Every structure is written in structure tokens, then in C-alpha cells.
Image (tube, rainbow, N blue to C red):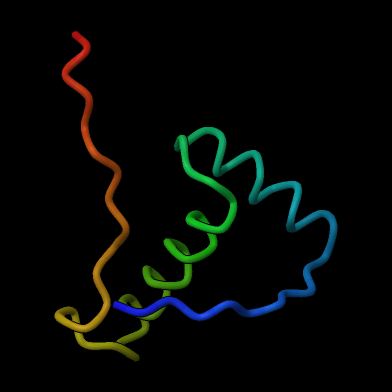
Length: 63
């Protein structure tokens, strides 16, 4: 899937919350925003499940 750069203007409080959420989930802010958008699109029925899949992080076997 090709990625396209897109400038984003975002409220500072929203950005701070996204940064904290991304850190909690070990994602970059960009990956977290994309994850949330994909989830919202799926949940609203605005995308086919086969077209938009969640961004998954690899699972570590460091147990």
C-alpha cells in the first residue's frame, strides 16, 4: 500500500493526548493517528474490512 504525506493541523491538547496514547502502545504518533483513523473507518462502516486493516506491531518473544 502506498503512503501519501499529508500536513495535519491539530489542537495542542489532542496532540498531547495522542502522544501519550502512542507512547503507551509503543507506536509513533503518526502510526497511532493512522491506527485510530483506520479503526474509526471500520467501526463506522465507511470501509470494507478487506480494504483497511489495522496496523499491527510485531510481538516480541522476550519472555
